[in-house]
Amino acid sequence: MKVVAVITEDFRFFYGAVRCLKEKGQPFISQGFHDPLPLNVELVLTTEVERKRLRGKKVIASDDPEEAVRTALALMQGGSYNRVVVGVDPGPRPGLAVLGDGKVLHSDALLSPEGVGPAVRDFLSLIKTNELLVRVGHGDRTNRDRVVNSLWSITRNIEMVDETSTTPRIGRSDADAAIAIARMHGELIPTKPQVEPTPGELREVQRLSRIHSHGAVTISSVLARDVARGALSLDEAIEKQKGKGVSEGHSGE
Image (cartoon, rainbow, N blue to C red; front, side, top):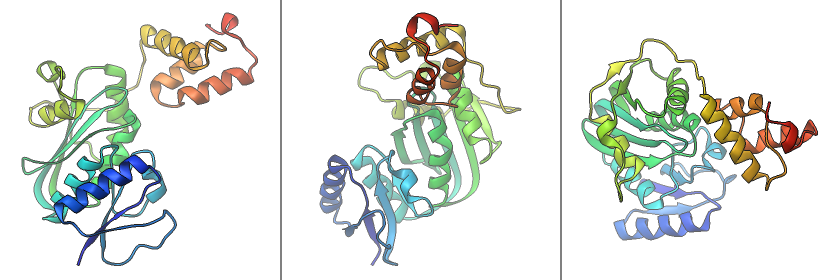
């Protein structure tokens, strides 16, 4: 009998996943990150943050335990599709949706634009498909281009979609917008984009660095560009700025 393994140190996720698995009547086990997986484990459930600790395994990562269980059950019912379409609603925490022959297999919000590529790669390792198409919303240019770059080594079959009508309304999530984007037609992106943050985005990153460091540091525009492009996290940029010994009053150049 195929079972699901819940591997996490997040108690909220653990109890939510276990409750949902019990409600669905799906057999499961709980294991530690370093425990060997039994041969009858079909899929592993964990959180987005913990995903990287489980490379090489059949992982479904989500911060929503109920969504993780829904995805697992959908995949275990049959993992072969003629066409898989991935929809992405770009942003600092992009919405992601995976549709198999028109059916929603998975939808979630990810931690960063760079997380889209690994999430899609992991999901593709769990299924079979004859065709993969990715559709990315056209808004939020910088984060959109970061998303496309994260996917470029997986597929060049990436379309840009006019997402004007998919902007989440009250009560509508980014994952819902990603589903809508996946179902729309777009234009094929011909070349890998260059990520070029706007001056306004750089100022916003610098403002966030002041808030995040409790007023101790304003990172330089060079570091802000690295953060906006996804090359550095905000915490890493703040530590680099502190290492230069530059205070808020001298670090805006």
